[in-house]
Image 1 (cartoon, rainbow, N blue to C red):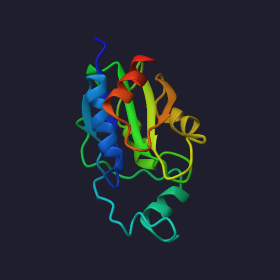
Image 2 (image 1 turned 90 degrees about the horizontal axis):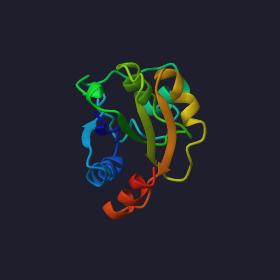
Image 3 (image 1 turned 90 degrees about the vertical axis):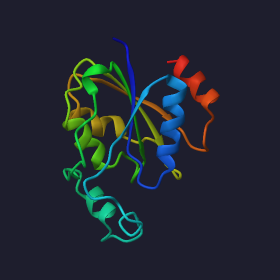
Image 4 (image 1 turned 60 degrees about the vertical axis):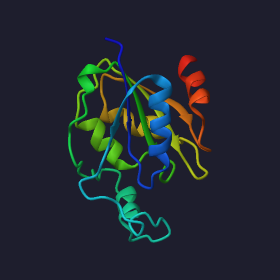
Length: 157
């Protein structure tokens, strides 16, 4: 089979742009992970301890509902999974996504966008949500990397 999927969650559009370029570079299908209730800018205000994202990230067991569960995971062997880094880890909607499908035998390569922090313990936080998958830290893809840059990264994996 050996088909590749780029699945991503983007709250503000930054990760979306990177995911689209990565899909082009990898010759991959593209899937957007969408919350049932979209995030507003007020929801994303990390300085407000009562904002939706702050509340969700303070409760690592919280699982935001997905808008759909239409990702064709079964047809893909390799999944690039992208998201913004929130509080040094993936947003909990990524756990929701991983727990909604069977990733047994799949290779999951993480990529992220971040305003300043790295992956931290992201792999450790996501691994229990996708038992049977090989999940690994990929790269932070900040600064709008070009399709050519992304192609070199993908080819080097």
